[in-house]
Image (tube, rainbow, N blue to C red; front, side):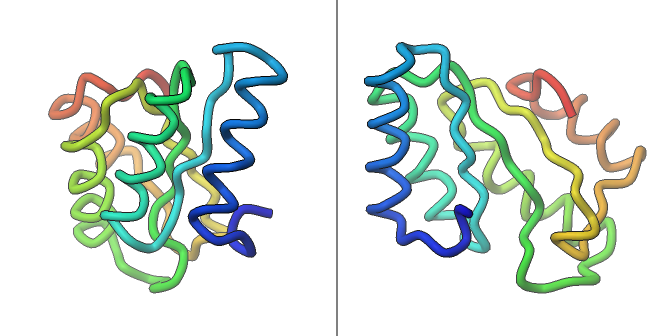
Length: 114
């Protein structure tokens, strides 16, 4: 699972997947750090991925709509690839509400699905 890998290991896995499967790879860039998620997204673009998957921060459970929106917006504003938002509240403790989906979708055209 991605949470047990270092950033360098995650980059290596992404590179290996692109090499094995071609450019039709969607990389999971989810971390608890905006900077690390953006770094993973840039790496994904550099090695030829077609998109990325992003979860809300999974360390600080119970961030509420404002916290979820703030974290996701900070990452989305810097993404070089289309993004699939992954709502997995049982894992993250931070659900993406329909209202937050709507607001993010209006503000960030790089979101392709959620």
